[in-house]
Image 1 (tube, one colour):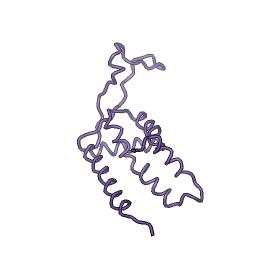
Image 2: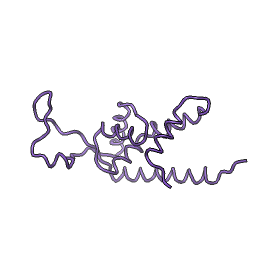
Image 3: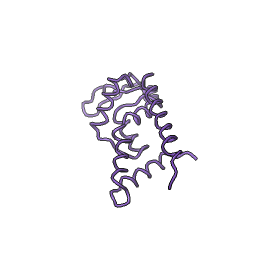
Length: 149
């Protein structure tokens, strides 16, 4: 049976607890496969549809159970654009497209600029699939072939 987002979040929460049960090496692993490889989570979300920066950060927290720093998220977006993994796009969500009036900035009472959306590129899809294959091979080679004492 496949794991759900909720299973993943609960597992991460258990690992994040600093106690005598969770070794420091596990804490390092957790950091390396979450915040230090944030691009994988970003690309996973962008496979679904174009998204804006805050939405990406919020969904990472909701679905994957960890919260990247705001600056880290935007740095990752910038680097992913530099690497050609994502692009800025003009995207009008369906709920906005149905409205005749443009969104209004309540503070300044004038028409608000649309948000900056990011979309995955073909190169980004290739990178995501390569990361996925890497993790699948690693699981097979390291864990399926391992035997205890």
